[in-house]
Image (tube, rainbow, N blue to C red; front, top):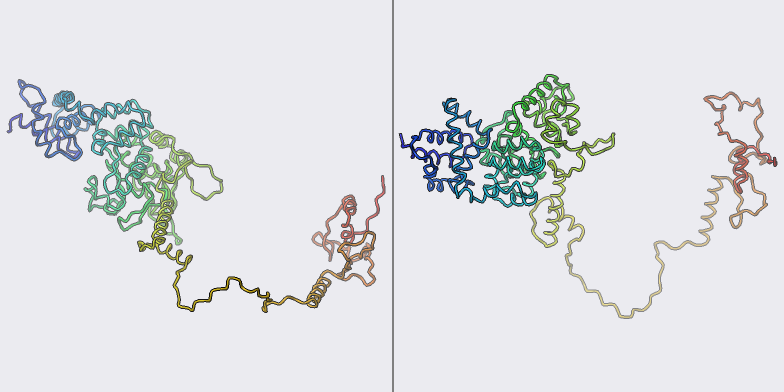
Length: 620
């Protein structure tokens, strides 16, 4: 067997250069076991551990610290100062054959080595470790600026520091700690077309799910991260998801085409954050407007690696209760089944697959990011926010409220409105704004096309360019000079020419006007009866006015007013359907109203055509 010193140096190098978090517990055991087997009389220093500095610099992982001492100090502190991480490592050690009697000695070796590395000059002088010591005390703006200016590798080192995570959790309010945690765990790799906007929106969405400080701290310490997938690249092209290449999902979809995953590291897509479209895969280019795969996938990560056993069991119990209810259950994706016109039943909705999809879809409902229809039933999903969860899933409502806060409030709307419910004050950028982004992209494309057309450029041949080109040509036309004989120049003082009348429409003569007036007068007389014509248009005061006839269009031959029918006249027979036989019911009018009406100048003549003569009122 190799000498203890050589074995100790090799074990330290293997731990420092390892990149697989799942194997880190085994590498740590090798190092601690070598220390534990060191003879008791040997000096307990960190020098043998740092003997392979040159080998480390040549094999240093991407983003790791430059110094072997700093790298080992970070790895050992993550185990010695985090009880949850140490418990996970001890489970690995037991599986490798370590007995309960050996565990106390291994814990002692871990604590001693971590304390010895932490006080080394190169560790205390490391800029990232110095920033970690100052970060909790900074103001919000200074902290955000410091994190934004850090390289991704240094930000990852901060995220993996359990001492920093505990300090941030203890000193910051819950909402601010959620924002810092989202900043630490979000990664925007090369290839993202809009890295600044996509990163900001990813951090904002992730922070909505980190309102519980204990869950946020547990995710950071467990190594959970969020990676933004470029819109034009497959998810499996990234290192974090390369192991899924060539595999298929539980429902038969190839992972190479899937746009999102919720493992320990969540994959969220650039197009869903921005409302854009992707060219990856053969399916739809974008999820429905208002549906957030970002929240869905990170809810998987939170469910698997952020919740304790009690909360996970609570979710399982609620799912089983809903499953037993069948079609009467309250599913986040709407009705359990859909039916076509022939009565054939569809497959069950997506939220009924298992408790993990059930919880992820319920998360979207609570945060009102669940737009669109279920892909299996074709029916609209529920998207009514916290109120729906409170009334339809009361067993999980306290957990959702603890994890995500109060949630968005529904904006007031008319009770008969058919528009979908939307959160109060929400901006289109909150959840996959596909429709708004399509409008903006089309406007931008036409603006570019207009510039190309105005500059007489070739353009890109897109539909927007063709449309703008056609509009431009149709509005301005194209000038093509034709050969012709030049017209003579006009004289500077042209002679006046008498104005000629148009031969197409000569003016009418006086006799024609008179004939037209007679024709119009005949039409008026045939329609309204013969009327006297007064010069000036207004009858003289006191002049007798002709009373219009009542008995017909022309009236009786003698021009007298007809009398009332006698009581025995057939016209006064019993009414049918509420009206006298052969007549139409007249609206009764009281004498006072008629008397007042008859005093209106110029109107009594009209009324007396249809009513009996009124008696003259006498003074009381």
